[in-house]
Length: 284
Image 1 (cartoon, rainbow, N blue to C red):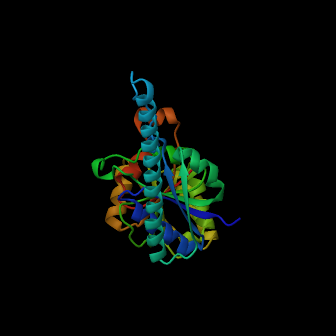
Image 2: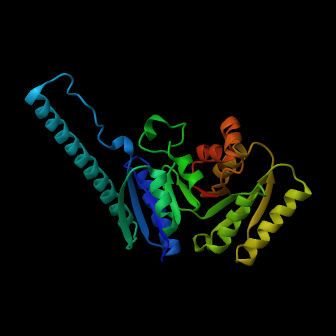
Image 3: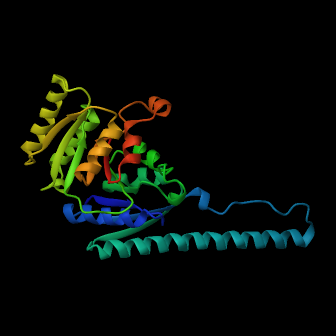
């Protein structure tokens, strides 16, 4: 079975960027694109008994009218979902992708993804969703849920797509970071891109050894990667590197600490995604 690039579109300001990033990945990997829109439970018609103490025929008539309104609203929500998918298809088609499918689902986004992620090569999601204009300092409510639940690589799209030729790999020596390096070594997505592996921390023998191991893995796959050790807070120093030196993408392991610790003190993953103005590829 051919694995797809699954792009999550919701009609928000980030949807066009999600489509553009998915098309870029498709062009480099030759994988088809599937556009997925999930009608969440909050969009489903709410069943309410508004009949109060109305009696006899009036109650029956009111309940019939309410049922008809529910049906009309459900139809409108579905029409909107299909319109979002049609717009997304037009964008991906404009970007040169020919193998495009669309899928409209009902229910919870994470549950929908868990059912189909076996078909996914990578999942593309926007940094923020439908309330993007009103929550510029916050990540989308579904983003962390999707990243924590999925076992596939996830690309978090930035506000707008820009050509990518330089990739920064945030490397902390953990298993997910090494998995990210291994992914780069195997994927055609990164062919002929400039790659630099960066560790944040003290310049010591352990960190240098970790970087050399990562560099050797990439070299065996044909990547002449550079390495660097920098000190400071990861999100701050890596975000500055990205901006100052024109990196077009960040690759990193996702949520290396326990969920409880992340809830208490935050996490490098969340801070990096929030602060970076470029797409971030996350590996579990």
